[in-house]
Each structure stands twice: as structure tokens, then as C-alpha cells.
Amino acid sequence: MAQESRFTIKAVRSFIIGGVGSGGDYHNVKGGHWLIDSDISTPCSRWEQFRKSRTSWGINVLGSFLIEIESVDGTVGIATGFGGPPGCWLVHQHFERFLIGADARNTNLLYEQMYRASMFYGRKGLPIAVISVIDLALWDLIGKLRNEPVFRLIGGATKERLDFYCTGPEPTAAREMGFWGAKVPLPFCPDEGHVGLRKNVEFLRKHREAVGPDFPIMVDCYMSLNVSYTIELVKACQDLNINWWEECLTPDDTDGFEQIKRAHPTVKFTTGEHEYSRFGFRKLVEGRNLDIIQPDVMWLGGMTELLKVAALAAAYDIPVVPHASGPYSYHFVFSQPNTPFQEYLANSPDGKSVLPVFGDLFLDEPIPTKGYLTTADIDKPGFGLTINPVARAKLIPSTYLLTPPPVPTLSTPAVAAPAEAAPAEAAPAEAAPAEANASEQKEANGVVEKLSEKIEQLTTSTPA
Image (cartoon, rainbow, N blue to C red; front, side):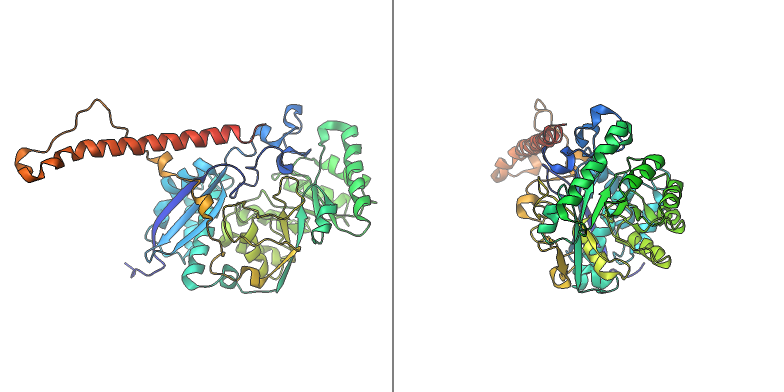
């Protein structure tokens, strides 16, 4: 057996993030937030009852969670993502077996083991998103143990300044905040017919007129269009100088991008936010019908897999501009030569101010308050994030969900110790079992109370 080192993993812990507005689930926000309650075309917009709010069809159903990975010397790596209770279940019931006792530096090995072990039910979606958060926590741990920021571990700085565009409801606000461009969500879907298409054109024209002819505007179609509608919409907007059209088609319609690119060869198209692993990106890159790919490091497989996707894209000279993901993306983009800029996803309710992407979860999350960041802003060990004590108080250990302590039966009498085992002067110790039962009962009651609070938060905090 290899000699134990300070990089050896001793423990893995996971937490559900109570309340709303914190952590890696971008959509776990309060009602009235632009991100969930604006007119946004989605895959479910074809049904009228699901057009008013994205929470109506469950976009925030999983919630956020947090992982801690502790090495034998007590150093702790942390990361957040989306997955909630199901994510925590996968961490401990499946993936933990590959981590305990392993060397945290073996990120390629650990990724491959988790990916291949979950292949029979995973490959995409939640299992890979959970692996992503584990992987990010490993990189945070390695950086802390080596006292280096992650971007220096994965290649060092390729740029001293990182410029951002802003995804939000108002391009004029993005320009005023110092961002180089703005991305807006498309409001109407193909099922709303020619009237909806005309409203989409009017919506984009209004924003173009507000910011002038040269300020870059991008359009997020969020998997909601089809080939024919995309071709028609892009043609109708050809005089609006749209910088790119994003995620026009569903993730599985990779052949459709060839058709829309053939129809509009000089127009830029992007996608990748909802794709997973290097295998998922291979066809997107090899087709050469995309001008930019946009993987999400908290979803596609973590930093370990994102580096492989970036190398694949670089071989085809396709830029990589990650989807959101806050500081995790920032470290990646600073380190790679084919990553020209980064997205900032506006986290304020009205989308018109710059707030931390992960809410109040961390004390020191770097944010592009002037539309950019420098290497000095992220030059801290690991990802440079510290859990906010206020947010930690809202963390619910997943042990409460996975292995709740038994609730003692109140009618069961305490069992006294045999007389010969307790000398006369120690007689008061006979009450210890009853005290222990009372303590266990109190702990169990606390578990039930916390779970009840969490259920109430999940069911009432973001009404549809």
C-alpha cells in the first residue's frame, strides 16, 4: 500500500443549503427574481401553463448542496453545485467509496472511476453534476495543500485581465456596469406562432436601439427553438447586429446545428451549457458548426473534464466560454489560451447590479464590479473561497437525511447497570442511560425540526 501523505482523503461530508439565494443552483432564488419570473422561452413554453415562471415546471426542484473533502492533516476542500438531497445521496451511497483513502491529486483516476462506475445510470445529468462538485472540491483541496490558486495548478495565467459580458434582463444596465456586452433571454417560443416571432424581433430591436449599434448583444434561446424557427428568426433579425445566438436547439439535436449554420454561414451560433463530458462535446466540436462552446464546469464533469474538452476545442480553434459557475470558471478561463472572456450571470433580483453568483454562501467570492477581474483578485489558495458563518448556520448535514438516528421509544424503561458493576459511591451513574436516551430524543427532535424547516423552505420559498 502506498505511504499515506497529506493529500490522502480522510473524510467526505455533504450539506444541503437551506433557504434560497445561495449555492450552486442558480435558479433557487426568491419569487420575483428576473431569472425565474421574466418572460423566457424554455423547452416547456410550448404549454401555456408553464410560461409565466420557470419554477412552474420545476427548474429549481433540486436546490443547492455543498461538499467538503478533508485530508488526513485536517485541510478541507469545498465546492458547491446543484443536486440537493439526491446529490448528497449519490456522494455517500456511491462515490465516496472511491475517495476515502485516495490521493486527492489523482483527479484523472478518481474522475474515471466515478464516471465509469455510474455509466450504467449516468453519463449525463445529475450523476455527472455530482461528480463535478466532487472534482471541484478536490481541486480546492489540492490548491490549499499546495498553497496555490487553482489557475496556477492547471497551467498558470495566460492573461492578467479577464473581461466579462453580463447575462441579464437589461443590456443598458450591463453597459452602465462596465461589461463589454450583454446577453438577454429570448421571451417567446415557436408555439406562440408568428405573433410570438414578431414580438421576439421587436424585443431585440428595442434593446438594440437602447444601447446603440455597436454594443454587443447576444441572445439566449435556452434549448427552446427548432431548426426552421431559428432560421426564420435569425433572418428577421439580420439588421440588428446580434453577436451570437445561443442554445437555439435541444442538446440532442446536434445535426440541427449543421442546418442552421448552412442557412446562416456568417452568423455565430453557440451551445454546450447542457452537454456533459468530453464524449458529449466531441460531436459538437468535430461538426465545426459552432463558433463557441459553453460548458458549465459545475455540470459537465468538473475541472478535470473541462480541461479535456478545452484541449479538444483548441485542436479545432474553437473558443471556450464557460457558462456561469462563478470563480470555478474564472480560474479555468485565466489559465487557458482559447478562452477570451467569461459570462457573469446577474444574481440581483432585477439583474441591474453586481452581486456574488453564489449569494451569501462565501465571504470572499470575487465579482466583476467593474466588468473585469485581474489575476490578483483570485490569487488565493484553491478557489479562494471561505464559507460565510451566517450561511454555515443554514447548512443541513446530509447525515440527517441519509442515516437519521433512531428515535427511542419513550415507554421503554432505562436499563440499569448490574449492581456489581457499579460501586456504591458511583450510584448516580445509574441515571446515565436515561440521560442518554433523553439526549438522543433531543437530537432526534432537532433532526425532525430541521427537516421540516427544509421541506417548508423548498415548498414555499419559490412559489410558481
